[in-house]
Length: 351
Image (cartoon, rainbow, N blue to C red; front, side, top):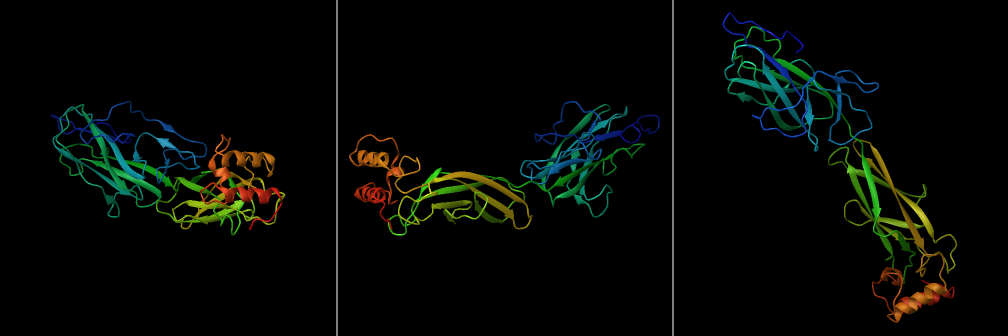
């Protein structure tokens, strides 16, 4: 390792531990010796610092290139906890008796009283030329930032050695704040306009926001909506009572049809801002606002819509689902819906 590899203890035996911490994505049992190649190699990303790894403190992704070193490893689980993966070799000709290995979590490279003791790892012995290791943890990371793991082999000095300087190794990892990432979907990609009396604001589409990656677990968020990048004017958006779900109501009819410009598609934007982290993520959905009675979705209310309504009222085959025919939004398709259609066709007010 970094210091001398051999130590002499009298003429009868030499016992030297060489310590290496290495990555593993699978939790090994404490007494299982990890396998696979172990080489001293450093990969440095552009602008990175040699020998420093960068990971995300909640186990997600971040807009920063990771730097990796394989001479030591403070590992991380997908849920943001951390592990210590370790190996130790006895490269001396003498067998070692029982010994303990002790990991510490530290804010610096110096072992002192400020470091966090992570427990003992017991081994019954290690023959000359043998190796041992495993994975210990997981533990919760106290906070994002720069952390070190200090691992001391034979921490109780149970094994006689001529060189104790190579019994300790250090790994440094920078746990940065992860990105906040959201996505959004709607259960319907169109919605009718509403009226105060006839539809009672029942025409709506449900917007669901998914936190694909939460920067700070348990974070609370401020929510902002936009329509085509500006204020929301053709819709009304309100919470459903279910976390991260919102009703997008079709805006009220402003006059009798035709109502120019109302039957078109709009980009609805949603932005989440972390109340403690300040991180921001945004997503958009496309939603068509239809004139009330525009069954076919072609932008106006005409004879083709009336023909479809007549067929549906007479239990004949139609080309659209019941959502399109339920003009008053009461979930029942009956004469009331046909009456709404007739008023729309005759450019009469629907209240």
